[in-house]
Structures are given as structure tokens and as C-alpha cells.
Length: 284
Figure (cartoon, rainbow, N blue to C red):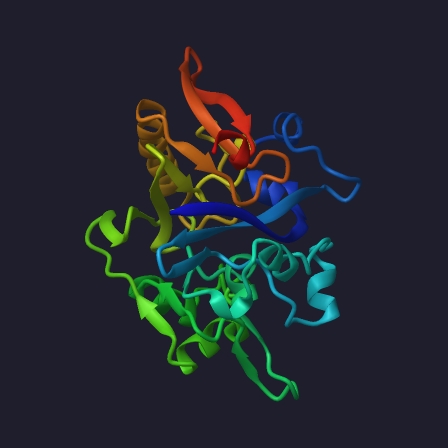
């Protein structure tokens, strides 16, 4: 097995929305805001070579929506994914599996594109299985008013229509052996049945954090996104996860932290806090 971090671009989101009830004077210590209260974030995917399989975890925002939609997010470097993939010696058609932690637009939008005559949509990865979970798929295709703006039908329905959609069965909160050396933690605070991959790699557990922990600025327990549908559940899920991550020395792979690619944790007299940050390739 070999793992590669891979960028799909950068964007901006409102700092207040990203930190919920936490005062701006506190969250700006780690995530400074511009004059519009917007903070910089990235969309960092993970590419996994494993035998004859080439898996991509999350796909970024894509390029299907109109100018008005994208104007809200101040995209930069949004065309970086395919060149970065090519630089690793792969093409879009080499991807065998696309694992979608959840179906919010900044995690799955890059999975689907316009067809050649822009009359409809088609998968970006024509040879891949697209992995979701049945509970979350139902949640996303029958969206609640709170999340409707994050679940865009043009990102989601073409996956099923292509015949490439597959479901990972949820058996409790932790499903073992979803793939080789790859287990899945299910969490429900941010959105229903979000999947958090745990990958065994070179004697370490690498955890793809998705939106359970968007950045190192979100490590303290009260730092929960305003986007979370069930923030009290997020608090419970974070507490359990962070304790285990600290005890078992997990390496946290951060999808949205524009500065810090990976992090480890430590116990302090103020609770669990950041220990170290580093780029993935510095460790491996």
C-alpha cells in the first residue's frame, strides 16, 4: 500500500459558521479571518494505491455549478486535482474506487462532471465504484431544510444513474475490513452516517478526518461547526474519538486545514490538545 495526499483546491467559508458558538476572538487565534469574516480552507483528498486498486477519498467541489454559486466560496487552485494526479503517474480512468465520506458539495462535487455537450452529467471516474452508505444516501437524497443547500442533486443523483454506486454496510458505529487495512467509523453529529476512514499504514493508524475535525483549530471540544446538524452528538463523538486518538497515537489527516496536513494529539491539564503538525510525506 502507498498513500498520497492530493489537493483538489482551496476555498473560503465564513469563520462564524465554521466555529459555531465559539467567540471570534478565540477562533481567530488559529484561523484568521479577512474583512468579510471569511477564513481560508483547503479540500485535501487522499489517494491510496493498494495492489490493483487505486482509491480516492473525497473529490472536492468540482466545477459544474454556475458563477454565482462559486462566487460565495472564493475558489483558488480549483483545477489542481487532475494535474496532481497525473504527476503521480495516474489518470482519471485509473481510479477504481471513490470513497465519499459524505455528500456535502465540497466533498463529492468533483465526482461528477458535465458531459461533452453539456446536456447532462457523467462520472469523472468512469471505471470506479463510488462508495457511500445507504443511510446517508437516503439522508442526502431526501434532504432536511438545514442541509438542502449542501446536498446538490447534480452531484449525487448521477452517481446512482451511472450504475457505479455501491454501499458500505453500517454495522454499529465501527465497521471493520471495509477494504484491506481500511476500517470505517460512522458518526452522526455533522450529518447522518458520515464515514471516517481508519487506514493501517506502515505500523500507524491514519485517520481521514473529513468534517469530524476540519482543522487543528477544532480540537478543543466546544469548537464545533455551525454546519453540524446535531452539535451535542458531535461533542460526544469528538470526545470519544479524541481520547482514543490520543491513547492510540493516531495520525490525523486533515481534509480542510489549509496550513496543517497532519496532526497528532496529547493529553494536557486543559484536556486533549495538539501535539505536533507535519506534512504526510515528512513522516512516511
